[in-house]
Length: 442
Image (tube, rainbow, N blue to C red; front, top):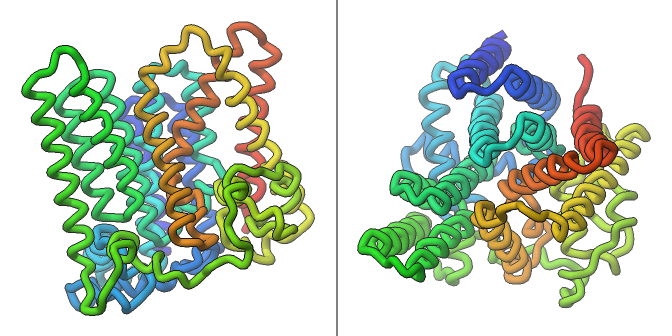
């Protein structure tokens, strides 16, 4: 009963926030419907399911909640990560969950749902900031809300829950600053980037993006003192945040630079059987992607980085479990994988024909997404591990991808009604297939 009260309160809070932000009834309905899907998924998903280190995440949180201090770096796998998410989760357990009215683990999953709502709100603000038409905004929103890995990540107890929100916020405010040149947007982007660094090393991507645009502004003819001040401020604040993130996780035992920055990811425990080759990062097997559910390739010789990343963008890197092994789930997984390929192909083929589109206003998202991808490749090369080619590390990239696809469909609609219906149909099929894959009746 307490859980249902909490979940009902979540829906009411979402309704209030979305109406205050003046989103129309269709968008509000989409968000509330997606939350119901997340809660349905939560009802049969424990902390450790489809969350390979979920139970170990609790060690870090409980250490702060019970002892009011950070655990030893070697106490758990995640203990090498910066502490912001774990401190927030510990504070949540000591305030909102006080009295045990809601089980500890379930309460943390509820926190993840609320954090994901923050991710959703920022996504909607991004779509609206570009003046997207209502149909474009709705299609992009539906893709983000009901994307398969969105449903999985919405209830995961992991520092990704907070890192994704902060990284997306940093991308959003950096883009606004690049387009409108308002100091308020710069400082908002700086704050989000600094907090992302204190949450997870993935935050280096958005920090690098902000510094890149701060330096880029110095090359303009009208060089002013404000531009120099902002560039210096970005470098100093983000450097300080990075040093603090590393300094908080020092250990008495000697640690390499990689271990200090990326934690236990650099311990070298999970070296794959197949030796890395340059071709592994550029090759792609579309047939193999479609015909299986999990990211483990059928043929080890075709263990490609792009295949694993693409598959993890849908279903993660962990096996989904026997409950998703039915013929119906296999058919839906094949359809979802095929739809992903179609959407990527549409985006790739449409780029040369996007005449009249002001690509400059999207450049902050291009740069940040490219840096995320390069970071993921470098991460995988430096620390060989199937978990280090997981799309969850760059999950915010889903937002510009969804916006890009919806915008292309909008542009195509001006020349062909048939192509518009086809583009919208592919997006709706992805949404409906994802819901059908994860939804479970009582």
